[in-house]
Length: 237
Image 1 (cartoon, one colour):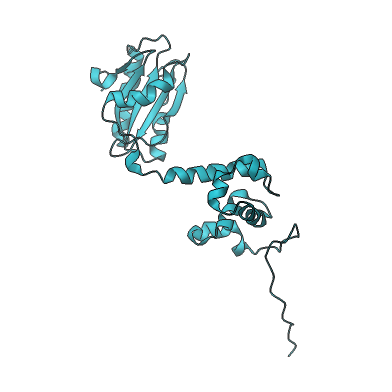
Image 2 (tube, rainbow, N blue to C red):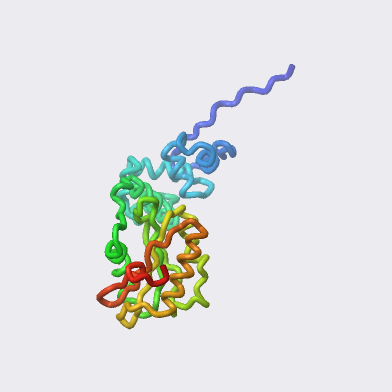
């Protein structure tokens, strides 16, 4: 019987800028990450972020140049793009992913917890007090009233029930599986006294939250130097 000769094993070690062998689908970094990211090497994880036909070889060059993932995380985008094959958009993706991983190491117990209107205002007031238009934001909270990320801007312009879609107010909360929200907007005039429209918007959001099982804990109206808690005043609640 005719027998095919045995072929020598393919050497996948990167040497200079030689053309790398084509990887099978199962060997490609994206496939490996999709099916078992925990089993991937550092080079494969980096390659999945970089993208492109030669991403694995580029990732290996990065690791060779910087020595470790920790050193890559400390490198600037300019230093990353000095490695052959790393373009600026790929360097930005890599920096963003490594920053996300750093933030995930922060214990959840250190997240800010909202105990009072003043706690919420401490986060929202610096964001809203100097705006020259009305901006409506939502602070997402978990089941222990701990803050889940940055405030989400929903709308800017005149606060009016005919213009604001209540569904948009809860979109981020639903995606993040938040248990509660704190609504907030500013008055460019500097006077945080709630208007009839503020009360109407608050009532609509509170009622919708009851249907969605996402509590609206308060609506903070921000002025130039002070704020008003509509929950404390019983307006819309």
